[in-house]
Length: 556
Image (tube, rainbow, N blue to C red; front, side, top):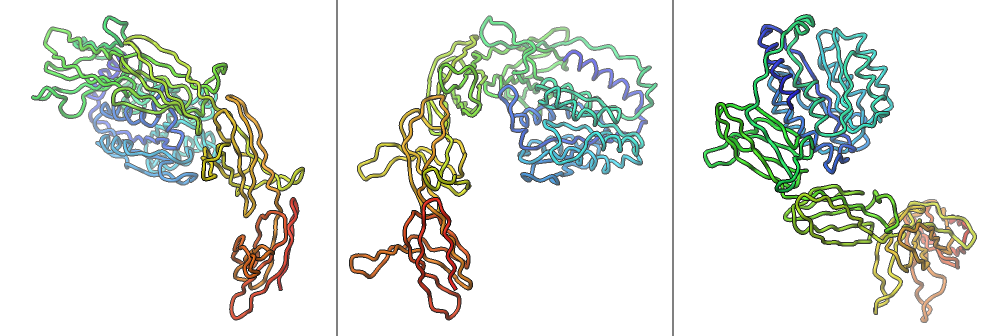
């Protein structure tokens, strides 16, 4: 915070000295692909981006022409989902923050085409243009960001692209850094909220109005004013300061007549402790710990004195590791861990790292139909690490047409896991289900039955599974495929060949519509009742189905 404040004051001096300069045009290109729902330290990346951008935009120099382009927020799987959300102009900061606040990430990552479109909108071949790309993923639309960067640099009058790799690994960052390097820009690795603040501050908030490079280099920094407010926070009374932790998010407001926060916040900061300078007056500091615990503290700034707003969150730091067995060394990333305390609740996948108010904490763990609940008490200031054992196994569903016969390879097979014990009415409780062979299902440890249904054939097999065990379960459908070709037919009804005791009716197995149909059936003899379009009499044809074989019948 000290470093950033010094930069801001130096920037103010430079701008005052060059008020006659023309404004730069900058386009923020923001990743809103589905991966932005991924979490960093328990908070989604899109949530961090919203708060960070809203904070940084408050420091954009007056006159800077700023725009926003977003990709991946309207359609899944589309490489053309790119939108000019806010055209570049002066005074667009509130419009940009409002648009980002309403984003719902869902799509792909066409970052190369987005940067190219942003450059075109900025008229990069005629005027100075800067693009700031914030991405949490790599190009997914078969484009070469390095090549387009070189092309833009060659054609542009003064084109620069800065790239912020939000949550990217070092290796991933190298694959997009060329966008910046090939245009004379900078690449920033932002692995958490504080690093994202620093990257956006340097690329967006610190972007001054155009001036000769020599003038900037020769400018003398203005003296930095002394701080008159020192903020600090802790987890417990008398406990250590949270210091540089970016789990604490501060917002500073002027105090209203009612003693409550008034208007928009004046400043925000991700830090457990920091310093600031404010005009004399009354203020409210709102501190939020990890999006879950909020505290307000009033303070007053007086001439010649240093205010010291302090917050005790009265909370514990908790780490819950979900496992299938107590012996597992790693967390199960598929496990949903719902945590709840007071009026707050949220869900993590895999290891849950969070803060909770001192007192009772409830944790629900879920793996498919397997659920466990634990409740425990925590004390302020302590760090609690717990394993949450969710005794679940995994079965891989498969099916065959006949014993030792061909495997069923179809997404139409309906698999269902049911309890082994039947109720009084003969039904069995369903635990979980899925479509498709070769899929995986989480199943509680114990004895169960796997049923499989394809077409008019169904069968089942009992199985047992242990916690942490993965096993293949194969259902023998004991069935064959009947294919019927009947030119001009409107429908084909498959009937049992045996009539009822009165010799009048046969049971209907299935009715299929069209001139070419097929169905999976148990082995046996059947009657096909074929009905035709127009004034054509129906026909009956016999058919035989054998397990593991395909039978074809032509009806003329």
